[in-house]
Image 1 (cartoon, rainbow, N blue to C red):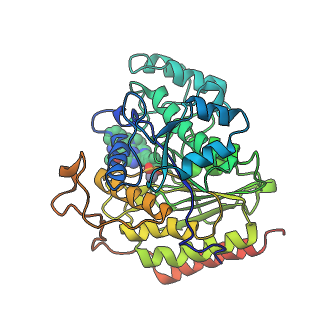
Image 2: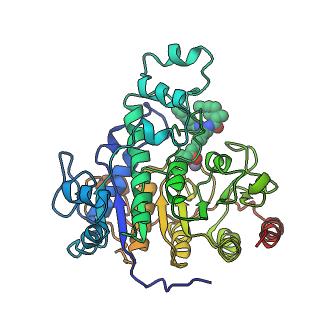
Length: 417
Ligand code: TV7
Ligand code: ZN
């Protein structure tokens, strides 16, 4: 049962790098970092936070590299940062431009050789550098695009900063929509993901929390995060994903972890077409039971928006409200939460979802009519803050969902106390 009222105001810190929207995997690739800029533009125009301009910072936004926050980083500054977050001039949350992650940050999880390769590879040298048996940048899913390493630095830097800010106690909820790249492995890129910002963020949270819970609502299985923590009981991973002839193919309900981690990986394999009611009928009881039995100190929430109805790659049928309800539900436990992005390939809906979910974390209601913003024409013809379900069949029959739910809840009850 939630320990804090959902109306209880929470201090929210949002991390955004204004360069992130400029990176392009390549023409026609479904992953479009530009959607993060679209979301940011909506967030700013709804008045949830100030903008950060391309050259520096506008009033009200703060870089973790600026002198005052530097002081905070060196010690005394918990108070300084708290003042910033509460002194955000009527906005719901404060925006930070995070420090970019460097090689040393990334090798807390990844191998030195792999990160060195990401650092030096270019579109021109990709074939040569990865040809000689270095099996890590594979095929069209994970191309060596221009600025690849910088893009990874931004994504990972934001998630690390979001974790550090939670650890400092300066915010209750932190958000990095450029993060959530859950498929990246220790020595290999996979499924549009090169650096696993989530693993790096969780490692930072583990410095002060004995137990961290990871929840993943991306339509794809969160295999990279699961694999990283498969043999430990200090991180519980819970992934809700489409399963059955669908990328990456892992995430069977019987995969529950190994050794000390046995029982601490949770997989909820779903069929295509799932709708809000069915999704919540399995999501809510499982999350309730996890919190009760595992008692995490912090929660990392991957909000991949490819589980929305109408996604180009997804196949689920969640509405905007149904997707955001997962964030609302998790927030209500009153624990520190780090909320991250992930997949999402119908870009106008990704921007809608991440804007609305930002507002949910701030406890703010938003007008259903979109405010004027830089990408207004993308949102026609209705220009509304909505993603509606479509008429595709739900292949998740009640008996199927019930069997999955029973299996997961049974495993949770048998965890050592
Ligand atoms: C977190 N599905 C990432 C999800 C990663 C999914 C895949 C594509 C795809 C790639 C393209 C492209 C595509 C229309 C869709 C087995 C393959 C089949 C490459 C064509 N169009 C996240 C990864 C998944 C690339 N990969 O969870 C360039 O779809 O299914 C596969 C692997 C081999 C490679 N081919 C696809 O959401 C961020 N890829 C068009 C251009
Ligand atoms: Zn996905």
